[in-house]
Length: 321
Image (cartoon, rainbow, N blue to C red; front, side):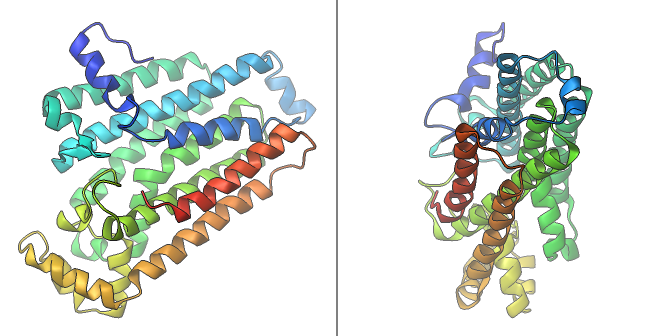
C-alpha cells in the first residue's frame, strides 16, 4: 500500500516498516487473530447484511484493516518524533533525525492519506467513521499532553483519558471494525472493542514502568524519556499520592533537570511501579474476560485464536521491551 511517485517520499514512508525498526507488528497480529476469533456463525438477520461477501473476500478486507491500522500507527510515530524532537526509535535513528522534520511530517501525512484511500475502498461507512475517529483521538491525545494545566498533569483520570486517545483508541476501534466487517452483533463488536481498549491501556502502563526500569536499547525511546521531557506518567502519579511534596518537584522538571533525580528518589521509596503494574494487570484481565465472553464455538481455529489473544494479555504484562 505504501507506493509513492517520489522515491524519497516512498523511502521515508517505508522507513518504520523495515524489519527490526518498528518491532514485532503487534497491532496487525492482534487484528488478524481477532478476525479468526470472530469467525463464527452470526444470526440470520446479520448474516443477510454481509451475505454478498464470501469468506475469502472478508479475510482480505479484514487484513486491510490491519494494514490501515499499522499505517495510522506509523504515521503517528513519525509526527510524535518530530513533536518530541526524538533522535531514536527502537534503537534506530528516528526518521526526523535521519531525513529531517519536513520529510518526516510529509511521510506521516502521506501514510495517513494512503490509509484513507484504503479505508474508502472498504465501502463501509461505520468502519470509516470508527477509524476517522481514531485519527481525531490521536490528535486530541497529543494536544492534551502538550496543553495540560498543572492540575490536569497531576490527575490520574486525565492521564488515563489521554492514554486512551494516544494508544488504546487505535487498537480498540480497529478490533471493533474487524467485528463489524464480519457482520457480528453490536454486543460482539463491543467485546472486541473492550479487548482492544484494555489491552492497549495495559500495554501503555507497562511502557510507563519500562521507561523507569528498562534500558534505551530495549525500548522504543530512551530510558527516562518521558520524565526527562516533563511528561508525568502513572508511576509518578501514584508516587505523588504517597508523597505530596513530589508535586512541587515534578512541576520544576523542565526548568531544572536535577529534579529528575529527586523525582526518581521519591519513586524508589514509593509503590508507584508496583501499583502501575497492578493497574496494568487489571486491564489485561478485563481484556481476557472480553474474549472469554465471546459466543461459544466448536471450531478449533477459532478457539486457538482466542487462546492466542488471551496469551497476548499475559505477554503484554510480562514483557521487558
